Image (tube, rainbow, N blue to C red):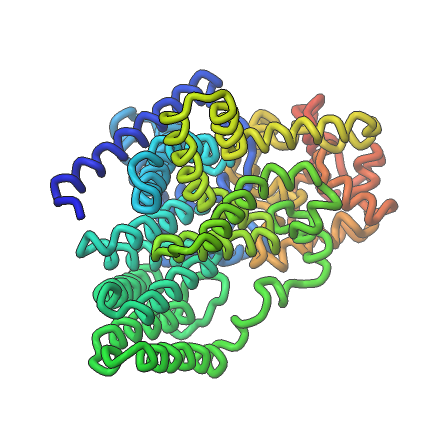
Length: 597
């Protein structure tokens, strides 16, 4: 076991490598002109709107988005824990530059870069504990490439998925280090609680980490007792702090399945305190059967609490979603598609999202088959398999499986590098090159892109027009900011950018809690022009926005070929609308509602 001084030295070494890789990625992004900032992403822009609202005086506990949805808005399911550091960067940059718009740009660039560096650092730490120092450099290289091309750390990426990946990787890395560092397990529990508080997408990974800690304690009481105790304390303690800090007293009795609330707090408190109590008890020290019985009782208690108090949270996440929204919205979100759907609809994406994790799982299976399974293998292998399982269900899980896959892939590269150092034959060199190529996720992405281009050569002109990217560019929304504030009737994918680039309010947005607003827009666009006019008048709509190159618009028009939206796309404009001259030539066409009389 190394000394504390050695630990500090390796910590500094890994941090410096992560910083260097971040600077290289940042320089490349700057050379490309920070092009990602010109792209429209609903979640990133709505996060910016949410931060602006906070800085402009909206209450800390008030998560309403008042400018989206029906009159009065709706409550978002996001956490202030992500808003806070972004708001702090904007405040600091604004004080230094004297310009709020410039400060926002700085935050849009700096925040993802900080998270990129942090994630890469914790990946390096995890790999060091898993495979030794020789695997750190490969981890930095293939990890940086994977994270960069995943896009969740691009400039403007203010959404919470990058925060969740960083915290989850931190929790894993700290658990791997826990046998050698006294406080690592406590901080790991803290990170696990925070990533759960940020969003429910990480429930499978947090649960996997907790189960692994418990099972490792069951089989090795001497080595894992303190780790299980401290992890449980950190997890329960931070969950309590987050509950008190982000949930108003008036909502303590509200059970929300899609965001941190009394449900998650109660379960986290029982699980964390229970695990710590079991690890500290003399009964558990009597043998593994006693530990198994204690942990089984704890698991049963958690299940009983869920069944008795929160049974609604045991169903599928979108089980209660309106069937029309599921059919016309959720089923068309790429990141919510299953692997089987991608094989049929977007086969090229399968290689980009599932290639390296599948290789990593194969490597872990080989390690298991050879024997000598270690606690490190249990933690990494369990998370990798669970993340891949989530990715099979929904492609969004592939972000985590790609990240966890970096760990065994880096060990694989280190092994072949060591062979190449002692054997200079061409065969070994070629194998090492092949190992590098197979382990680099962008190689799979490039192959997938090339395949996609080949498959799309015969695409018709009509199909190509539906992939027009003008609807996803910031410049297309410039006209909104020059017009008097009003309510805008637009499809869901136009909602967040309209809020971000103007003072208007909208009804639709791609968020599952905005049921009433999304259904209102569907009723208007899928119905007849007369039915749409009644909705427009009832809700005091001033503008109607249509993006001709939008896949969403094409899908809705196909659904209702004689509907209001389909008519607008074909140039049939009812007499109660007039085109707005400022949008001539833009992919987004605006129509002003004529005032009666």
